[in-house]
Image (tube, rainbow, N blue to C red):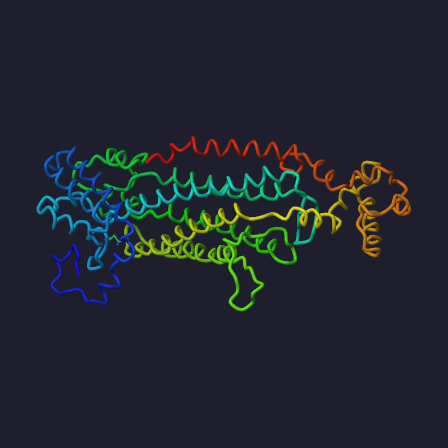
Length: 468
Ligand code: ARG
């Protein structure tokens, strides 16, 4: 048992209590952030004359040595310490002696852990943004290639109207673009430095909090020390945004699973992203998509867990808040893994464009356009709807499509039909006449693609928001 606070205690902590309380098994993930924060803290203490320059050099050398030894695997983070903060401080003191004992001047583990967690989360947000950009690029590549690939659009999982594969993919581009924007919003709102908040009420040392904030790439210090140590909103926001990312990935996975099924055969998932069955030799299962869909629950779980943990906590720091880590770390790792794998699966997936077009031809996806034809010839829409309904019924009985009917058959049901009905209900016309903003027609799609390309170009340029 190694802890920082033995002084006022006369008995050893019970081993079970110690184990229950300790967080090193999971907060060791924060070692780099903990050391980075400590270096900034020490630089500020020396600048303010609270530490001498010699002490500063010794401590920073010591901390850098610990960082590089941990990274090289020469120093193992031992579970014998209560948490990562104790491990770093105790190791520093063991290595450099008395100067190390001054590291914690004007600081509490409360503002320290608040800082570590923010630094960690900020890096994660940057990584997640980059992964989302890769996903957006993969979607955009499919869009550019398939502006003319007609497929059925569905409502209620029933064929509704013809669209293009580019248009369908564009819907996901919009979703993940919003997810990408959310990362940036969270980053901007969370980017304030809690270090210097102390345990809860600041400190009596003349700390320069602006300086520490600047050293660590924050926009400035947090403005209330009680909130500084106990704010976990940014994590809740991230968990919420990641839950939405997962919900989008899960919907997309569901479609990939359906499309990959024998019944649809719209896509074929690459062998590298499929798995076989131990008993049924013919099987090629979409396990990756299923796992992504399944892992969504874990990320939702992290959001619910943290919201629940935080709801009853009086100001300021309470130990409940240690529970912010395990599930959030897991959610971040899970979401990153899912985005990356999904992107890979998408990049290697084959689209069976002929099957898609054939499917769009069956199922009366052009019925609305037949009704619109009548409207354009002066028939009120409600009557047109009824006439086309009868056409569809006739086709179902004869087991044919609207395009297979003769003009005579059309005219028996309504004399308004002329020879040009066939052109009006061809799938190509149905798609390409839809050119209002956001529609699947080629002109509209080209415009959307142009804007999406611009968005991705600017996403990289605007990277000053995560300059740290
Ligand atoms: N392990 C703690 C956490 O994750 C660090 C802060 C401890 N502070 C305290 N006063 N016990 O929240």
